[in-house]
Length: 126
Image 1 (cartoon, rainbow, N blue to C red):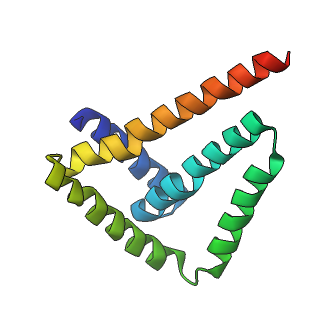
Image 2 (image 1 turned 30 degrees about the horizontal axis):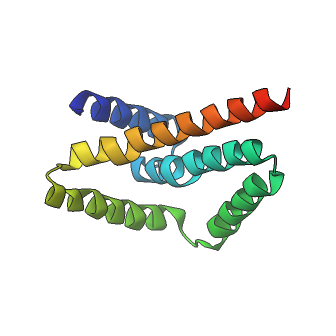
């Protein structure tokens, strides 16, 4: 798990350096905007309903517009997420283990499942 955590951490740090956003901002963008956008896109394809992805993107756009300072907001939300991941110590997982399970394994399972259903739906139409 340590290697997966290190890989994701280094990737997010690299994106941060390239983009000019802080590490915390990139973390929030990836886990609260990009990954959920992918979920909503796949759901819109599965159910053939464009309003799912359009509604989510409109919600994100409105939310971002209403946040007066994205950097401060990101730091606050990141700290809250760290507290959430540290809570898993009560279940016997340290921060790194909880991060990998919650932020890598679960999204991967969800994306894999959505891709499976998207492909199954596409094959049934043809």
